[in-house]
Image 1 (spheres, one colour):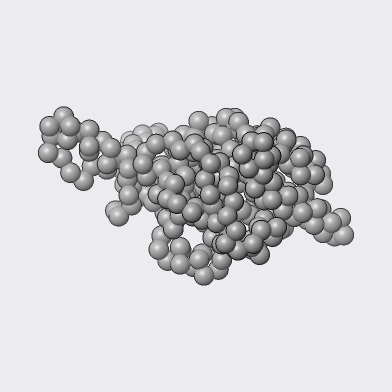
Image 2 (cartoon, chains in turn brown, purple):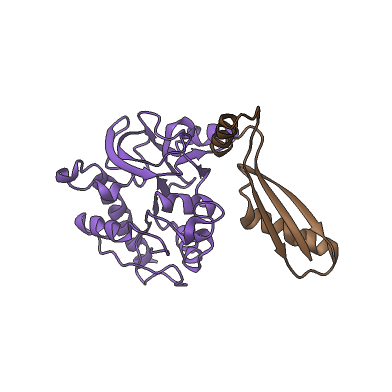
Length: 80
Length: 224
């Protein structure tokens, strides 16, 4: 199975990195706002069907890939 | 404990010796702590490139399983800087350390105020006492959600606060303890403040308390 995990700073969590990127984009002349910087994790793994795959991905997210205190995850499973 | 990237492990060992400890450096892939371990110190520096989030990979090191078992039976554990980040990621301490709000590495002496002088690690101090201890970190902004923060404050788990805003840390938190008080993490480096010639000896008071706690824990183990 292939999956992509998108990790974002949770709503309301201050994202100084996003603010710095926003500042620089503005310097370039772009009228941007609400810039948030997250992380993309692509992975391939073995699973016995999509349910098993989702279960494993949930565990990967809580045990390592994201810190639920400050980050939200969006998991995209690509079957096959 | 030494992780790949730790750079204050030997300083911590030296400073702990100066206050009466007999430190042993333990490599991160050991599965057991040395027999008779009285306390564990996770040092500052870096670990595993601090990939993903600071301390996240190190929190899963084999030696950390041993540290968790040690803490589960009341063994005192102190995490300094990266060690604090590791303890938060290992969920042995509440909250998480985020990039400094000003996005700059901060490296200077700071004053911290003692909020709780009853904890294992702050017993040699007094409430409201101010200590001067250096910080040197890029990711020291401690964060917890509001409910958690209120609970921690009510339970006196916030033991040290910065006197000024150093890094955007919620509530100016510089150091916290776990619910039982046997695990503490702090961003300032007490091991760099053990000699007045180097600016301050205030860190020695914290480290001496770790040695007290280690001696007590070793006695409890010996009696068991």
